[in-house]
Length: 158
Image 1 (cartoon, rainbow, N blue to C red):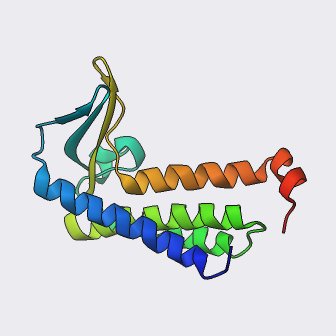
Image 2 (spheres, rainbow, N blue to C red):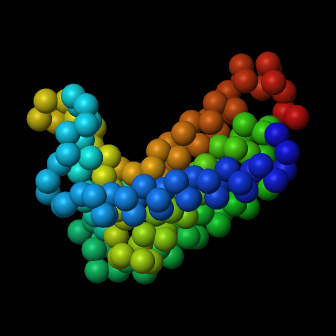
Image 3 (tube, one colour):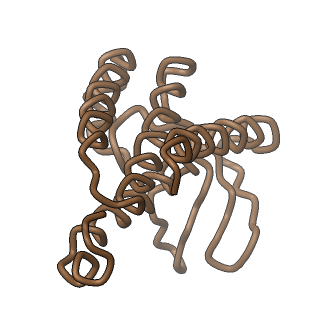
């Protein structure tokens, strides 16, 4: 993987997130789920808190503080990304950073993160999420996997 691929991965994650959120805002109505598959709806919602709505009551009236906190964490991750040892680890950091920036853009633009992906089983619904959250989750998994001894043994640190 070439060095210029890394920022490109982050920018693609950010763009995909913003495009899908814009489409959700146009096509969906809050509180009216759109059934796609059994166990999966598109359902528009807005998250003023952290991941999975944590701290939403405490952070509801302070979207700029939440954006600043998320931005600071993202900056810290960008500094850590400068020390990666494998292309997979670098790609993981790029996905996490791109996804995080997508949610920061939402907080700055709307005061809340736009969520629209709804996975459920019977009456139990996972907290709604978006493509930024997908990028963050995949990126975090990639970072963890590259830290495992089996990965290091097979692919090394280069």
